[in-house]
Length: 549
Image (tube, rainbow, N blue to C red; front, side, top):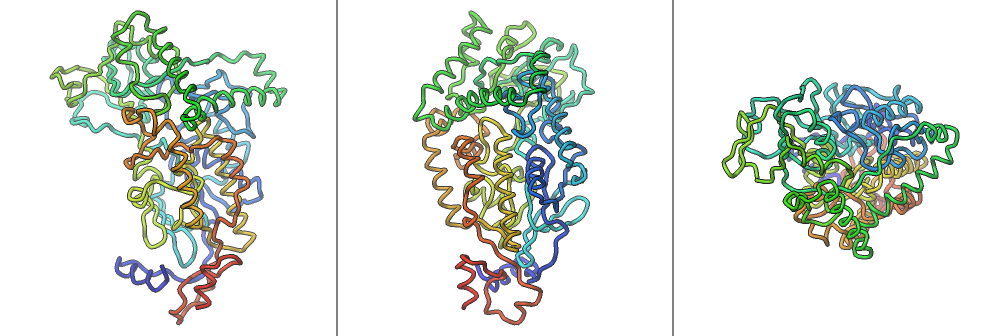
């Protein structure tokens, strides 16, 4: 689209046409979110000497998901050796699978050690970000006012927007009600009649923790979950001492557990057609785990055995989830819910189950409009990113950049997440972001945008690879998984190993991007024949040809 056409379209929308200038933004780099993704991006940039950055965070502390999720039993569901930055391993985990408060403390230590706090402004929520095509900058509207940034790094994470159940009457319940993502510790569950709606990974951690202290617990299950044994033990003091004295020892443990996690969580799911035996082994292990915890209980076995393949839905680990259902004060209810009443929950068989406390373990919005990103993002031509994805499928080059949205880097974009560890994705995408910004600086460029042909070729390759994954081959339609979007795609996980992802982040050609520079103010005034607002760089044939005309 040329400038004249763009002005006409903007005029029709009642918007101001872009100015052609070289205004300096308030920030060269603005990072939105101070969870591990935002911190990882900032650390990578600072390590390269890029210090002209700012971080804004809606809450009052770092940590993201681990700051917000405080429900009983919250913990990592892969080993802590892997669930941490490779460059900042923690020798002091109390358990192989660390509890949530330790992850939050780890986030604070990382922020302090790497000097991030001076760069963070807390208590600022982003409402909207719009790309100014004339000035090559992002205009970001927050609840504290508007700021501008040359480069925008969106690090808002995936598990930040609680998903409320679409059940009639949920607002009418007159007892205590809370979502697991917004746990209210002032509510005492002791001796109460409690209902938990949902049996995903969060519920698997929560239910065994609260069952012993409630009077009665009803667990409402729509879809069962694959649960493997949890090789979790308390870390002995001598091992922590060894790790503090020898980083090589801890690196060895990390490498071993990483290989095991990679095999189970990536190879089994991504390369399902090649290695179906891994998925079948995991399913047998899940069934055995259930039957060992619930011996001689075929009725519960039937209810708790998934009808979909391992990997379709996020699996988890627990040594006491299934055995909780053998308690006399716990009932597993699989009859669908009709409505929520002021006093409890009514199922479709017209039975009302009265309760005192309603707990919603119903997960999060993930790849849904309004969550990724969690604010309005408007790119070239006034196109909203969320609407674009809703109409045209979720897509991003290397899970990070999207054509039409220059200078924007989405840390958790479509097909970005590596199944073995969130931190691997963060480190890979942080390298990618830093390389783009460094390349722009070297070229004195004000605009960085992934080439459409490169992006499209990459997306076609992603879709081809998806055909061999467990998601499209193992009855996943029955899983009710947040891995899937309304298009039927599974844009949560990247269909590759972490080794490939990191290799590409470090070595992908910067020629895959357009690098342009805004014209000085007034440079284009009076010449409507010019159809670009950017000065071309060598190799940018499209813009060069436009100017020759």
